Amino acid sequence: MNATRAELTRHLIDMMSRSSFELRGTDQPEWPQVELTMPQLRTLVFLRNAPQRMSDVAAMLGSGLSSATSMIERLESKGLVQRIHDPHDRRVVRCQLSAQGTAELERFWRVQTSKMQVVADILSHEELAKVVEAMEILVAAIERHERARDRAASESPDISQGVDR
Image 1 (cartoon, rainbow, N blue to C red):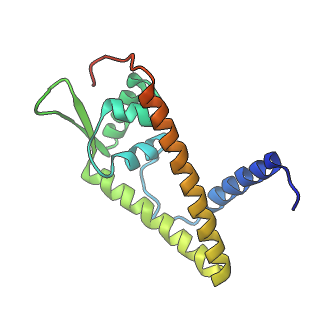
Image 2 (spheres, one colour):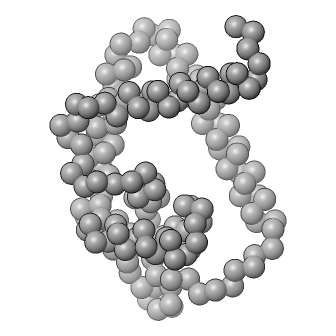
Image 3 (cartoon, rainbow, N blue to C red):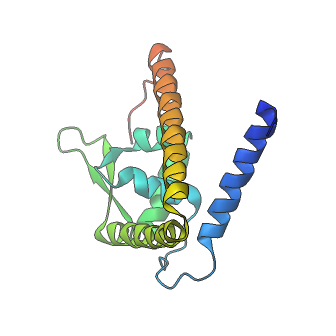
């Protein structure tokens, strides 16, 4: 295939979109009962390992503090997240998954894993090895991008000296 870089990029985007759409499918017996937007799901995944400051949630979402606060309020109203005050500084609010949030996230991962298992079972050993290699390359590129973005952010002057909510 003698495609240009732009054509290959468009094809990659199309294939990623199609695979994502197809993996969602319609047969979802275990799908979480709570309706979530993609940013809400990303927030739950972000909170899965440890409580995070509201400013960190905003930075992960690429949004302002007020938008992140609204997002957390919506997740809190669904019983998925709880806010806790830092015992050392009451002005700092940390967000963490609730027990229900943890259960919903685990259900989501189970569904996704079972769908990927079905796809992996269809592939030959050689095809599966190629897909894994391609995904490793893609993840490494994403990690390089994230490190470059983090370096650029740490080198730029921080103009936000506000209090973390």
